[in-house]
Image (tube, rainbow, N blue to C red; front, side, top):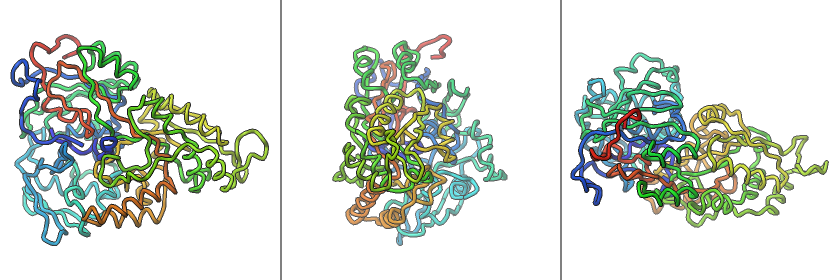
Amino acid sequence: MAFRSPYRWRLLTASALACAALGGCGGRDRKPAAGADRDGPPVSGGTAVVALAADPDVLNPLLSDSAIAGLVNAELYDGLADMGEDLTYQPRLARGWDVGPDGLSITYHLKPWSWSDGAALTARDVVMSFGLFKDERTGSPRRSLYDNVVGAEAVDDSTVRYTLARVVPDPVQATWHQVLPWHILQGLDPSTAGTWPINRSPLSSGAFELESWEHNRDLTLVRNPAYPGTPAWLDRVVFRILPDESVRLLALETGEVDVADGISSSAAKRLEARGDLRLVDCGGRRLYYLQWNCLDPVFADAATRRALSLAIDRERLVSALADGYGKPAASPIAPALWNHDRELLPDACDAAAARRLLAGAGWRDDDGDGVLERAGRKLRFEILTKGGDPVREQGGVILRENLAAVGAAVEMRAMEQVAGLARVRAGDFDAYFGLFTLNLYGNPAPSVRSTATGEFNFGHYANAAVDSLLDVALGERDRARALPTWKALQAVLAADPPAAYLFYPDNLVAVNRRLRDVRPHMLSPVNNLDEWWIAPADRRVGPAVR
């Protein structure tokens, strides 16, 4: 299965990460992996169970915020192209495409395709879906990704042409989006997209379709009988929602779960010693970060944000929280990507320099209580984060200690992920300790452009130089000429940080050996899900429906 770019939106929006950052599968040939076919060739049937650390927020790629929702959406909705494991685009719904001679258009030629209800998927679906992503009324957090696309038109039922506002480095990337069923959405008000039925009961154009979703418990996909492509081998995939890491680990060890990502380094050795599990290091396409709310007077100035970043011991975070499976972060562009500035060093922990910067920004401890104040306001704030995640819970202890050393009083508040993200998106936070999946095309605009406050710029960061550098970098087709601009952008973000970029964790994925041909990748831990299979002798029966 090729990467279906939404998980890869934070990827790919993320995660993009790259191998410390954000990539997807290459090709659709059904060849059993070497050594994985000892019981013969793949055969249909069986159920795999995959652990998720949180419930998806919404199964609508127009609106979803979380990487977990993107992971599931990637199995339900296709795009015209897919990003492969080599990080190049390959045909998906389209059989191919042509870029106009002047570089200002790209035309896709669609394969015959259908939705899971049997309705034909045509150029109309593609064009109207794109219109919804662009429509301000929809409020899609991905809207700015299409700033360089004027619009799309259906030349005929199987041909779609996109018109570009200017020449762009990669027209396929610039026009990539998932396709939604227009025969279901036509007539609906885009401004009410948050209440649309497909948010909870989506149709599918992928190899799997939704069978059931019991919130905060499990979400089940089954093989899509109307799928026009090569059918999935598995009958069913159950995504089990297990927010607590200890519960996920126990489920792996008891066989209740077959696949789980985000395995801590402390658990990895124990799991790998078992004969029934294997561990795959997918590198990293993720970034732990501390987002500042720039609308808060405490964080409104660059000097204060920079000083607080210098107070943080990133090496200690990597050592204590990832046992060395990761690296300190300096940039919102994944380290594995071509435009990541490898010469830009992460902020080293320097409490003395942090205190000097804070003093220069007007912060003083006039009452001698150890907490700085400025203009009658204490340097006291709350860090919001996700509960049930040992990395963030233990990391919060380190952050509090580091920040206290420079005169900041910090309280941690752990919340369930969906509720916490809702607060962050609403701007109801001081700082947010989060985990972001970086996009694989190395474009941080959705999180740092001043106009992207409806996307992933949760802190309302605004810097005219950043906006200008993004415009130049995203308009240059030649990588060699574009790279200095990308480096300049990352230097500005280091000097005037919208967030403290903490570290890029490697993603360790545990896989039960009864599953065959499983290829976790930095694109997604369930990268080639429609190629997974289970030999009949390894299938389980009983109430766990495996």
